[in-house]
Image (cartoon, rainbow, N blue to C red; front, side, top):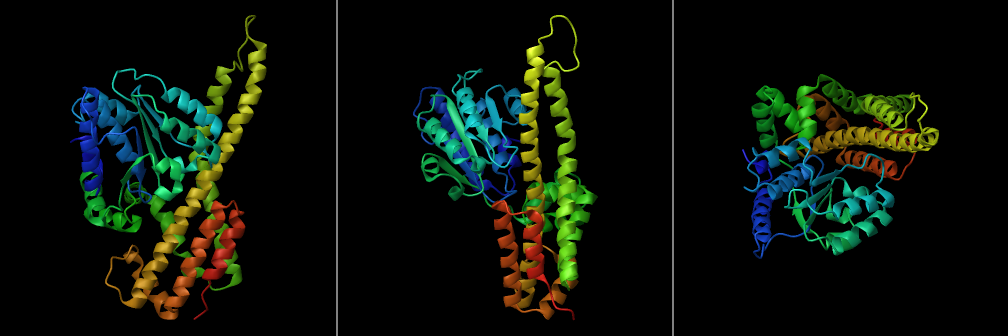
Length: 393
């Protein structure tokens, strides 16, 4: 299998990237290399595989066979050890100008292995305005062998001056059948479970994998989808909001705890904490206090982002639920993401109108916008659950 064969439901994007990799090889050989450029923007809905497509393209640029999938170059990209591939994953809520300037300096170096120097910038839309302006300068005047691969949900998430200088690769939501096939063939998931996970994840490949393989993930989804049925009064709405936010906090803490501990231990080791000896640099130890404070700030930002991401996943599950309710109300013959909760869908469809359903969807989307604008999560979610409240039958 070649590196592009892992892109699920992205045949058109894969074709574009294969051709560009061939053009890149021609350029290295002294040819025109039509179709190859120094800056790319990968866009597509969450879970469509933006980063995977960019990583596959990086492997194809390094590989002498344009992405065979089994050579040393392809393997090094897959495991993240290729010396000419710089991967940027913003851990916090944003990516600042200081980090961007350091990244640009590293990107300007010559390729170690003589082909390309590739920067894969995941979630490039998290770059601040100052960082984006610095990035624009680097893209406008790139070194001859440096290639920028930027990933963002949509072109509009990037500065117009940046996206106008990038060749765009648009990924689509993979069909349910394609995701289910991957789960069944590569993860040995039973066909029925694979179909359920693919449908529930709405084309989000990583989410489908978690739902198929992790029972706790399925339990969390069930807890979220039980919320609409429980919202019969103000007290129930407040309780549901508290439970959702608390669950997000606990999950975020679990995700970040181990990583935080290892980062702190490594930093203290670097600055000599716990060491002794006549030649020990005491100033170095004192300097570690400032570095530790900076690390704690980054970890706090990462925890906040993780918490918001967990809440946002729950909100998207609720949007899918009410969208299915709307489909039932109109008698639309479409695939329902929540077919496994057909009774709840039909019950709510009978007890409300399509206008009610649309109003509830709008309330969830407003909650997402408020969270993105740094509104207190508890307040934002409470306002949403109160808007979702249903009358007692």
